[in-house]
Length: 215
Image 1 (cartoon, helix red, strand yellow):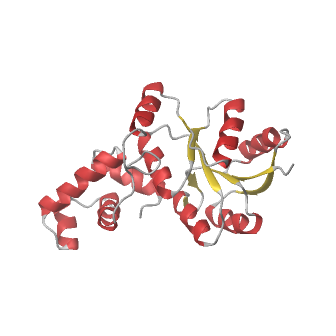
Image 2: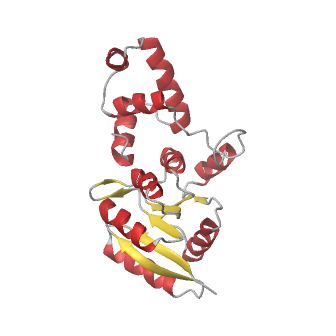
């Protein structure tokens, strides 16, 4: 029986070593590649074509979410499991919208992580957060009809454009001028983004854009 091929992408050497030991101890999976930054992650993914990529949200050289689309554009057909310290619904939504299959926090138990890898390799979404109420809220949103993997997080081109400018700290009136739209229209887009991503303040938008590579 062929083993499940796993790639690790995290800038913490000790964490990667621990994950490698745990995964390689399993009869049905093995680590075939590792990377500690965005550029190497793309190169190694193309070279090794892993079944599952375990990916952190933030890496040296930039946020990691944009590389999911990049490796897919290069013909890599891998399922992505986000393993991160960010216990936040906005990050979950952003990761799934970017193309990730699963999202778990780094406090997850060893056996639960191994099962999450197996489930992810079958295309099954796994979300495991520390905050039980938040986890329940996330799964309630999975029941919403007409959403991608349960999440209404796919942003339109205009929403993405507004999000990028909000992430740069521009006010509604400034964005309206840049996009040649009315401030009321920008306020509507901002409200939609707040609902989809769970962001409220300008500081929320700026931090989110920086962490997820929205710029």
